Length: 177
Ligand SMILES: Cc1cc2nc3c(=O)[nH]c(=O)nc-3n(C[C@H](O)[C@H](O)[C@H](O)COP(=O)(O)O)c2cc1C
Image (cartoon, rainbow, N blue to C red):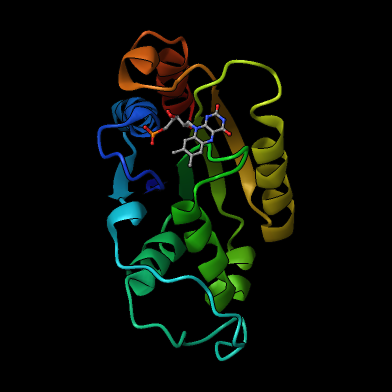
């Protein structure tokens, strides 16, 4: 299976990418091919909502969305990776998702498998439900098949994350695919 991981953190060696790396390790050990798209460091622009694409066509922006689109449309699974920013996903990842608009029809017809990996500083129960529910809603709307979520509470720094149980959890999720 081809798995595309879309990274939404500005920190290349940060917490969400550490969890993503564990997932990658598990998935590759299982024999899957993993492609990493570091969306936070790609040339991406926010959707203008101009309607030029008609939800299934060329976007007015000439940027790396075509790279992401081609990778996602040719993948069997996408993994969304993000730090938690004000109880939601990062703008870097949201930008990728909003740009799905230009290939919404093709993408929702695929029945893509997906997973979510997040990292937040706080460890209380109020940190993750908003992002988790947003992701669940996205899965229902886009006809994605959810394969699991790593809700990385208490992952505020790389050392906190290295010592957290979410590292093993992310590895096991990759292995379970
Ligand atoms: C703009 C911003 C907003 C944040 N909002 C939250 C938040 O709502 N809850 C939380 O627990 N941590 C919050 N954090 C902390 C990050 O989620 C946390 O440090 C995370 O480990 C960063 O992941 P990264 O290293 O993958 O970028 C925020 C950090 C920033 C920069």
